[in-house]
Image (cartoon, helix red, strand yellow):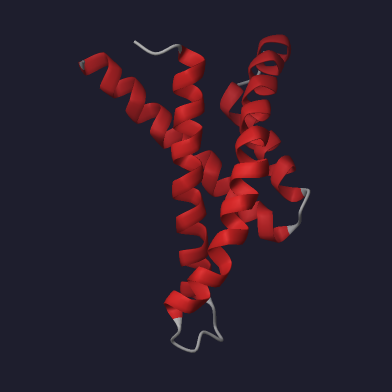
Amino acid sequence: MKHPKVKTLLRKLMVGFVTAIIVPMVLVGLSIDSSGEFIAEFMYMFPYFFYGVFLYGIWASLLSDSLARSMAYTMKKPEPIISLILHVLAGAIFGMVSFIPAITFFVLDRLFQKRSKVHNQVA
């Protein structure tokens, strides 16, 4: 059985990879001026999101969750709400471009976390 912190880091890495794929796909798909070159535009955007998520996003998320746990305890507020606010603030540092991946990362992380808890209860 893996240590909980290792499991958390592995989950964040998986969520980061999924986020780095989904966000550029959605943005290219929603692009009004898309000239039908979906693959080319995706391949252009993907490295920026990949490096952004892996060099900044995962670590910001780990810090946000850690701070949210301690703040929830002291403030008597729900931890997920505090974590969402901290994720949004961390994403807002780089403007709208990082705001969308921050929210996506948070939502996917909560879904993966919930799936992991259900899977652990069944196993």
